[in-house]
Image (cartoon, rainbow, N blue to C red):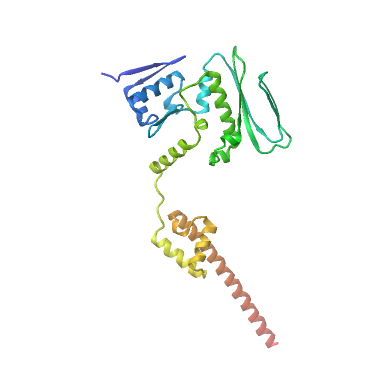
Length: 285
Protein backbone atom coordinates (compact mmCIF):
# COMPACT_ATOMS: atom_id res chain seq x y z
CA UNK A 1 0.00 0.00 0.00
CA UNK A 2 1.21 3.51 -0.77
CA UNK A 3 1.44 6.50 1.55
CA UNK A 4 -1.85 7.97 2.66
CA UNK A 5 -2.66 11.24 0.86
CA UNK A 6 -3.86 14.21 2.89
CA UNK A 7 -5.55 16.82 0.72
CA UNK A 8 -5.72 20.42 1.83
CA UNK A 9 -8.09 22.37 -0.45
CA UNK A 10 -7.02 25.96 -1.09
CA UNK A 11 -8.61 28.92 -2.78
CA UNK A 12 -7.36 28.21 -6.30
CA UNK A 13 -5.53 24.90 -6.06
CA UNK A 14 -4.96 21.84 -3.87
CA UNK A 15 -1.94 21.02 -1.76
CA UNK A 16 -1.61 17.30 -1.24
CA UNK A 17 0.73 15.92 1.43
CA UNK A 18 1.39 12.25 1.98
CA UNK A 19 2.24 10.89 5.41
CA UNK A 20 5.99 11.20 4.75
CA UNK A 21 5.63 14.89 3.91
CA UNK A 22 3.47 15.48 6.99
CA UNK A 23 6.22 13.92 9.09
CA UNK A 24 8.81 16.10 7.34
CA UNK A 25 6.79 19.22 8.19
CA UNK A 26 6.53 18.07 11.80
CA UNK A 27 10.30 17.60 12.02
CA UNK A 28 11.30 20.85 10.30
CA UNK A 29 9.05 23.91 9.95
CA UNK A 30 6.62 22.71 12.66
CA UNK A 31 9.14 21.15 15.00
CA UNK A 32 7.78 20.58 18.50
CA UNK A 33 4.13 20.95 17.52
CA UNK A 34 1.54 18.70 19.16
CA UNK A 35 -1.06 16.93 17.01
CA UNK A 36 -3.54 19.74 17.62
CA UNK A 37 -0.95 22.45 16.92
CA UNK A 38 0.11 20.70 13.74
CA UNK A 39 -3.53 20.52 12.61
CA UNK A 40 -3.94 24.27 13.19
CA UNK A 41 -0.66 24.91 11.35
CA UNK A 42 -1.78 22.89 8.32
CA UNK A 43 -5.21 24.55 8.41
CA UNK A 44 -3.67 28.05 8.34
CA UNK A 45 -1.21 27.13 5.59
CA UNK A 46 -4.23 26.03 3.54
CA UNK A 47 -6.35 29.02 4.55
CA UNK A 48 -3.71 31.54 3.49
CA UNK A 49 -2.23 29.59 0.58
CA UNK A 50 1.26 29.41 2.12
CA UNK A 51 3.64 26.57 1.36
CA UNK A 52 5.62 25.20 4.37
CA UNK A 53 8.21 23.61 2.08
CA UNK A 54 9.03 27.03 0.61
CA UNK A 55 9.38 28.46 4.14
CA UNK A 56 6.38 30.71 3.53
CA UNK A 57 4.95 29.64 6.89
CA UNK A 58 6.58 28.10 9.96
CA UNK A 59 5.89 27.21 13.58
CA UNK A 60 7.77 28.32 16.70
CA UNK A 61 7.35 27.14 20.27
CA UNK A 62 9.09 28.26 23.47
CA UNK A 63 7.65 26.86 26.67
CA UNK A 64 3.90 27.36 26.46
CA UNK A 65 4.10 30.13 23.88
CA UNK A 66 3.40 29.11 20.29
CA UNK A 67 3.39 31.22 17.14
CA UNK A 68 2.55 30.38 13.57
CA UNK A 69 4.63 32.77 11.57
CA UNK A 70 5.01 34.15 8.10
CA UNK A 71 6.66 37.20 6.57
CA UNK A 72 5.53 40.36 4.81
CA UNK A 73 5.83 38.36 1.59
CA UNK A 74 3.48 35.74 3.04
CA UNK A 75 0.82 38.38 3.71
CA UNK A 76 1.35 39.86 0.25
CA UNK A 77 1.07 36.46 -1.43
CA UNK A 78 -2.30 35.87 0.22
CA UNK A 79 -3.52 39.34 -0.76
CA UNK A 80 -2.47 38.81 -4.37
CA UNK A 81 -4.57 35.61 -4.63
CA UNK A 82 -7.69 37.74 -4.19
CA UNK A 83 -9.38 39.17 -7.26
CA UNK A 84 -10.13 42.24 -5.13
CA UNK A 85 -6.46 43.14 -4.60
CA UNK A 86 -5.68 46.34 -6.49
CA UNK A 87 -2.20 47.22 -5.28
CA UNK A 88 0.13 48.06 -2.42
CA UNK A 89 2.35 51.13 -2.10
CA UNK A 90 4.62 52.29 0.72
CA UNK A 91 7.43 54.75 1.43
CA UNK A 92 9.76 55.79 4.21
CA UNK A 93 9.27 59.24 5.73
CA UNK A 94 12.41 61.20 6.64
CA UNK A 95 13.17 64.60 8.10
CA UNK A 96 12.88 67.24 5.39
CA UNK A 97 10.00 65.49 3.60
CA UNK A 98 6.58 67.03 3.12
CA UNK A 99 4.21 64.47 4.61
CA UNK A 100 0.55 64.60 5.56
CA UNK A 101 -2.29 62.10 5.98
CA UNK A 102 -5.89 63.27 5.58
CA UNK A 103 -7.64 60.42 7.38
CA UNK A 104 -11.13 61.67 6.57
CA UNK A 105 -10.42 61.68 2.83
CA UNK A 106 -8.10 58.64 2.82
CA UNK A 107 -5.46 60.82 1.20
CA UNK A 108 -1.68 60.82 1.64
CA UNK A 109 0.57 63.71 0.59
CA UNK A 110 4.25 62.82 0.53
CA UNK A 111 7.03 64.67 -1.28
CA UNK A 112 10.70 63.90 -0.70
CA UNK A 113 12.83 66.77 0.57
CA UNK A 114 15.99 67.80 -1.24
CA UNK A 115 17.96 67.12 1.95
CA UNK A 116 16.50 64.11 3.73
CA UNK A 117 17.47 63.58 7.36
CA UNK A 118 16.86 60.82 9.89
CA UNK A 119 14.05 58.30 9.40
CA UNK A 120 10.80 59.29 11.11
CA UNK A 121 8.52 56.46 10.06
CA UNK A 122 6.85 54.79 7.09
CA UNK A 123 3.41 54.62 5.53
CA UNK A 124 1.62 52.05 3.40
CA UNK A 125 -1.59 51.99 1.40
CA UNK A 126 -3.43 48.90 0.16
CA UNK A 127 -6.33 49.15 -2.29
CA UNK A 128 -9.07 46.52 -2.35
CA UNK A 129 -11.86 46.59 -4.92
CA UNK A 130 -15.15 47.91 -3.59
CA UNK A 131 -13.64 49.25 -0.36
CA UNK A 132 -12.08 52.46 0.91
CA UNK A 133 -8.26 52.51 0.78
CA UNK A 134 -6.52 50.96 3.78
CA UNK A 135 -3.76 53.18 5.21
CA UNK A 136 -1.21 52.62 7.95
CA UNK A 137 1.56 54.75 9.38
CA UNK A 138 4.22 53.46 11.81
CA UNK A 139 6.65 55.50 13.88
CA UNK A 140 10.30 54.48 13.56
CA UNK A 141 11.00 55.06 17.24
CA UNK A 142 8.28 52.63 18.29
CA UNK A 143 9.36 49.73 16.10
CA UNK A 144 13.12 50.13 15.73
CA UNK A 145 14.59 47.04 17.40
CA UNK A 146 18.10 48.52 17.25
CA UNK A 147 19.70 45.22 16.28
CA UNK A 148 22.12 44.37 13.49
CA UNK A 149 19.46 44.05 10.78
CA UNK A 150 17.67 47.26 11.77
CA UNK A 151 20.96 49.16 11.91
CA UNK A 152 21.98 47.93 8.47
CA UNK A 153 18.59 48.19 6.71
CA UNK A 154 16.50 50.71 8.69
CA UNK A 155 14.46 51.92 5.69
CA UNK A 156 13.57 48.45 4.46
CA UNK A 157 12.63 47.24 7.93
CA UNK A 158 10.31 50.10 8.89
CA UNK A 159 8.71 49.96 5.43
CA UNK A 160 8.00 46.24 5.96
CA UNK A 161 6.29 47.01 9.27
CA UNK A 162 3.94 49.48 7.59
CA UNK A 163 3.13 46.99 4.83
CA UNK A 164 2.50 44.17 7.31
CA UNK A 165 -0.07 46.20 9.22
CA UNK A 166 -1.92 47.47 6.19
CA UNK A 167 -2.10 44.03 4.49
CA UNK A 168 -3.33 42.40 7.68
CA UNK A 169 -6.05 45.01 8.07
CA UNK A 170 -7.09 45.04 4.42
CA UNK A 171 -7.54 41.26 4.14
CA UNK A 172 -8.51 40.32 7.69
CA UNK A 173 -5.52 38.07 8.28
CA UNK A 174 -5.70 36.36 11.67
CA UNK A 175 -3.81 33.53 13.36
CA UNK A 176 -0.47 34.45 11.79
CA UNK A 177 2.20 36.84 13.01
CA UNK A 178 5.39 38.24 11.53
CA UNK A 179 8.69 39.06 13.19
CA UNK A 180 8.01 42.74 12.62
CA UNK A 181 4.85 42.50 14.75
CA UNK A 182 6.13 40.54 17.73
CA UNK A 183 9.58 42.09 18.03
CA UNK A 184 12.96 40.43 18.08
CA UNK A 185 12.81 38.08 21.07
CA UNK A 186 11.83 34.98 19.14
CA UNK A 187 14.25 35.67 16.31
CA UNK A 188 17.13 36.20 18.73
CA UNK A 189 16.30 33.00 20.60
CA UNK A 190 15.91 31.09 17.33
CA UNK A 191 19.24 32.36 16.06
CA UNK A 192 21.00 31.60 19.34
CA UNK A 193 19.67 28.06 19.39
CA UNK A 194 20.45 27.53 15.71
CA UNK A 195 23.96 28.91 16.22
CA UNK A 196 24.61 26.56 19.12
CA UNK A 197 23.20 23.54 17.31
CA UNK A 198 24.50 24.02 13.78
CA UNK A 199 27.68 26.10 13.94
CA UNK A 200 30.66 24.26 15.40
CA UNK A 201 32.46 26.02 18.18
CA UNK A 202 35.71 27.71 17.23
CA UNK A 203 38.67 25.86 18.64
CA UNK A 204 40.57 27.53 21.43
CA UNK A 205 44.08 28.89 21.07
CA UNK A 206 46.63 26.09 20.74
CA UNK A 207 49.57 25.72 23.11
CA UNK A 208 52.10 26.29 20.32
CA UNK A 209 50.23 29.42 19.22
CA UNK A 210 50.39 30.79 22.75
CA UNK A 211 54.14 30.07 22.90
CA UNK A 212 54.73 31.81 19.59
CA UNK A 213 52.72 34.86 20.68
CA UNK A 214 54.72 35.18 23.89
CA UNK A 215 57.99 34.80 21.99
CA UNK A 216 57.05 37.48 19.47
CA UNK A 217 55.87 39.81 22.23
CA UNK A 218 59.12 39.24 24.14
CA UNK A 219 61.16 40.11 21.04
CA UNK A 220 59.24 43.37 20.80
CA UNK A 221 59.95 44.13 24.45
CA UNK A 222 56.32 43.81 25.50
CA UNK A 223 55.24 43.07 29.05
CA UNK A 224 52.07 41.05 29.74
CA UNK A 225 49.85 44.09 30.19
CA UNK A 226 51.23 45.67 27.03
CA UNK A 227 50.48 42.51 25.06
CA UNK A 228 46.91 42.47 26.39
CA UNK A 229 46.41 46.10 25.40
CA UNK A 230 47.96 45.46 21.98
CA UNK A 231 45.60 42.50 21.39
CA UNK A 232 42.53 44.54 22.30
CA UNK A 233 43.68 47.38 20.06
CA UNK A 234 44.38 45.16 17.03
CA UNK A 235 41.60 42.55 17.33
CA UNK A 236 39.10 43.98 19.81
CA UNK A 237 39.17 40.67 21.73
CA UNK A 238 40.75 39.91 25.14
CA UNK A 239 43.95 37.88 24.85
CA UNK A 240 42.54 35.08 27.02
CA UNK A 241 39.48 34.70 24.75
CA UNK A 242 41.28 34.16 21.44
CA UNK A 243 40.39 31.11 19.38
CA UNK A 244 42.81 29.44 16.99
CA UNK A 245 41.96 31.67 14.00
CA UNK A 246 42.25 34.85 16.06
CA UNK A 247 45.54 33.65 17.52
CA UNK A 248 46.87 33.20 13.97
CA UNK A 249 45.78 36.75 13.17
CA UNK A 250 47.60 38.08 16.24
CA UNK A 251 50.73 36.12 15.33
CA UNK A 252 50.63 37.60 11.84
CA UNK A 253 50.23 41.11 13.25
CA UNK A 254 53.08 40.65 15.73
CA UNK A 255 55.26 39.11 13.01
CA UNK A 256 54.72 42.14 10.78
CA UNK A 257 55.79 44.34 13.64
CA UNK A 258 58.88 42.19 14.11
CA UNK A 259 59.69 42.34 10.40
CA UNK A 260 59.38 46.14 10.40
CA UNK A 261 61.58 46.29 13.48
CA UNK A 262 64.23 44.14 11.80
CA UNK A 263 64.06 46.24 8.67
CA UNK A 264 64.49 49.39 10.73
CA UNK A 265 67.45 47.86 12.55
CA UNK A 266 69.03 46.85 9.24
CA UNK A 267 68.53 50.36 7.86
CA UNK A 268 70.00 51.83 11.03
CA UNK A 269 73.03 49.50 10.90
CA UNK A 270 73.51 50.31 7.25
CA UNK A 271 73.47 54.03 7.98
CA UNK A 272 75.97 53.56 10.83
CA UNK A 273 78.27 51.55 8.55
CA UNK A 274 78.11 54.26 5.92
CA UNK A 275 79.00 56.88 8.53
CA UNK A 276 81.97 54.77 9.70
CA UNK A 277 83.17 54.39 6.11
CA UNK A 278 82.88 58.14 5.48
CA UNK A 279 84.70 58.88 8.72
CA UNK A 280 87.51 56.46 7.80
CA UNK A 281 87.90 58.01 4.36
CA UNK A 282 88.04 61.53 5.79
CA UNK A 283 90.84 60.51 8.15
CA UNK A 284 92.87 59.08 5.26
CA UNK A 285 92.52 62.29 3.35
